[in-house]
Length: 364
Ligand SMILES: Cc1cc2nc3c(=O)[nH]c(=O)nc-3n(C[C@H](O)[C@H](O)[C@H](O)COP(=O)(O)OP(=O)(O)OC[C@H]3O[C@@H](n4cnc5c(N)ncnc54)[C@H](O)[C@@H]3O)c2cc1C
Image 1 (cartoon, rainbow, N blue to C red):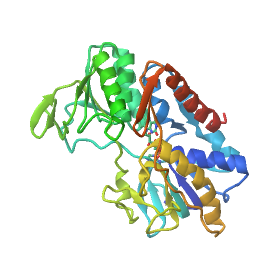
Image 2 (spheres, rainbow, N blue to C red):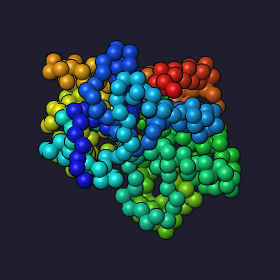
Image 3 (cartoon, helix red, strand yellow):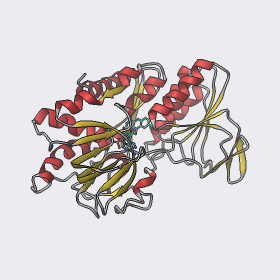
C-alpha cells in the first residue's frame, strides 16, 4: 500500500489538540492543505466528566466532543485510525489497519493507558479506566446485569478515588474496594486525604493502602505472592503508562517510554515531532488534563511558528495546580497545596468548568 504524504499530522484527539484546534478557529490560522487529525474515534471523551457519567450525573452525549465540526471549522481533515508504529527516522507512521502515512511535521497527543499488573492469566474481568469507550462498555454491562458483584479498583490517585465513588453511586448492589500501592491521594494535602478516607468509609468502600497488586492468577489478586482478594471484576486506574509503540519509535523517551520534549514541546531528538499531554515527558509537567490543556494553548501558537520557520514560543509548566475531585453526589473536594475544602458549591463550580470546556470545544 502506497503511503500518503502530509505536511502536518495531528495524532490523537487529546485535550491538547482540542484546545489547539479551537485556538485556530478563534485566531484564523489555517494549517497547510491535507493536514489531518488522526483519531481512533469520531469523537473525543472528556476525562474530567467520566466519573460523572459513571455516577449517572451526565449523559454520554454531554461527555463527548464530535471531532468533525471542530476539524471542519479550521480546515483540518479528520482521519479515523490509530497509530500502530512510528518510525521517526523515516518520518512514517503505520496504522493498525496497515495504512502508511508520511509527514513533514507530526504532533503527538495520544494520551496514556493505566499500567497493569505485570502477570495476568486472564482469570478476572479487567476494565482499564482508559480507553474510555471500552471502560464505558464494561460498567454499562455491570449496571444492566444488576447482579451483586464484587469490584476492586486499583489505584490511589484522583481518577481511582472518583471512579470508586461513581461506581458506588451507579451500582448500589456492588461491593467495592479501593486498593492503592501507597497512600490514598499521595501528593495531596493531609486534609484532603483525611476527607477522602472519611467519604470512602461512610459509603462502605473498603480502602486497602500500601498493597501493590503485581499478579492476577486463578481468580485472585496477588501482592508479593500473597492472595489479596478474588473480585468478580477489576477496574484499573493506576495512572499513566505510555503507548507501547512510543519507545520503539526512535524518539528520545524517558525511562518509562514517554517522549522527552523541550520547552518548545519539540521532541528532544527529532524537532519535527511535537508531543503534548500524557504521552510527553517534560520536567515539571504532570500527566494530567490540567497540564495537557495548558500545553494545548501554547501548541496552537507553536505549530504556526514552526511551519513558518519562526522562533518558537515556550511552555513553562505552572509550579502548582488546583485540583477539584468529584465525590459523585454533586459535591467536590478542592485541593491547593496544603489547603483543602469540600462541599456542594465546589461541585457546582467543577460542573461549570467542565461544561464550559465542552461548550467551547463542541461546534456541532
Ligand atoms: C477517570 C479519569 C478521570 C480523570 N479526571 C481528570 C480531571 O478531572 N482532571 C485532570 O486534570 N485529569 C484527569 N484525568 C487525567 C486525564 O484523563 C489525562 O491526564 C488527560 O486525558 C491527558 O490528556 P491528553 O491530552 O494527553 O490526551 P487524552 O485526552 O487522554 O486523549 C488521547 C487521545 O489519543 C487517542 N489515541 C490513543 N492512542 C492512539 C493512537 N495509537 N493513535 C491515534 N490516537 C490515539 C485517544 O483515542 C484519545 O482521543 C482523569 C483520568 C481518568 C482515567
